[in-house]
Amino acid sequence: MAVPPEQAAPLKPLHGMPLVLLTIAVAFSTFMEVLDMTIVNVAVPHISGSLGVSASEGTWTISSYSLASAIMQPLTGWIARRFGEVRTFVVSVMLFVLFSMLCGMATSMPMLVFSRLMQGAGSGPMVALSLTLLLSSYPKERQGIALALWAMTVVVAPIFGPILGGWITDNLSWPWIFYINLPVGILAGLITWMLLRKRETRTVKTPIDVIGLALLVGGVGCLQFMLDNGNDHDWFASPLILTLGLIALVCLTFLVVWEIHAKHPVVDLALFKQRNFTVGVISLSLGMFAFFGINVVFPLWLQTTLGYTATWAGLASAPVGVLAFLLSPILGRNMHRLDLRMVVTFAFVVFAVTSYWFSTFDSAASFATLVVPRFVMGIAIPCFFIPLNQIYLSGLPASEIASASGLSNFFRTLGSSVSTAVTVTLWQHRGIWHHATLAEYVSPGQPAATHYLQQLAHMNFSPTQQLGFIDQIVTREGLTLAVNDIFYLCAILFVALIPVLWFSRPPFGSAGGAMGH
Image (cartoon, rainbow, N blue to C red; front, side, top):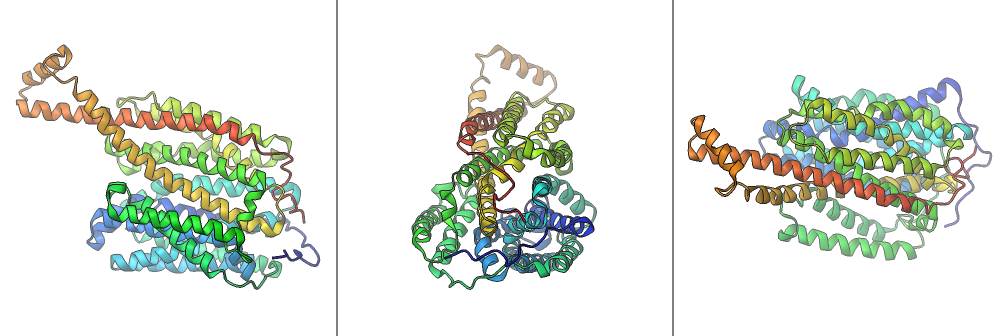
């Protein structure tokens, strides 16, 4: 398909108050969408209790959202070309708001799952198009700041999700985690439409690639469902998970082959011919895998092993957002002066050092001890997300930014989903292994164990109580050693990613080399 000329006369960038208002509207809609991925996590027990279903059925509220969102993200470019970027974004925001309201009003689990599914479908194009609209509205020399503001909302939202979700669930009730989207979404949609409706992109009426669409929905849907539910079903020991895995493999393999040869592909895989796009997306996906793994296992360990409440686990995780929030605008303003590969290398080094630092903690670590490396890790977040977004967008014409952003967001989301599945499973398996290894030392032949049992006997513990007490300690230490293993592996992955990054080629220029207006 020949790419149409962008506009007969290129539109001038926005300035002053309109630009400020647009930035706030787009940033808040992005924040709202990303927040909804994690805000529900802490409310699952309340939701399942309120709707009279089991906790495992309650997790469908998370699965259904991520499943629909993952399917829609790679379609962003095609939808935006067909209907226009501004129209697609505003409709996406309004659908998100509508189904957020229906989620809060749900009186049964099927109704809530359906609403979450549709909410996820509506949210799919939002994040990618928010970046595209910001870049096309900012003057070329200030696009680094646009990228920084966008990256800041995408990074900080998942960190605040559990804290905000915990507070709302404890102090109000779970429907309010959905209702808070209404005023934010409606205002964001209205402001964006008022400012950008006359700046709509050219639309192209292309035929619908039905086979590609069917393969995408089947492949990504099965893959996402498998990743979300594999751990509960003991992975490939379950016929359901095995079947889903095979369907996903077949569909996605055929999808790649089909889309490469399709005349009007629904997912633009030709983007991977660009070296910087390929290197950027690989670095972003694998970096996200390691980063998200730490963010999933850390609060889980605090709650299940060290006895933290959801709110305190959130507060222990939150300091990572402080420096990220403060440094993002500074980095964005100075991006053109830096070698972006050096900036991302620095981020990976900081991530690796802090991950290794975490791997040295034991179960007696205090709250203050745990917070310090989380705070330091915040330095790396803007240095990781902002330059990588610029690297994968560099050299692409404006017409391909929406497709590139949608596809990279899909791989970022997929990296997060795979990370959650792999790290939680690995943590549990390593915990069992460490438990078995440590239990070998609880025997009459071990003087320390014998001495400890004697102390418990003096405290009037019965033999059964003594062994039960020791089993609790062994479980706690086993899970702590297992979490140390995960952090150590993440540190290795961060170091291994550094050489990959240097395959990208400067100049990186302004985001989307051909994006100057």
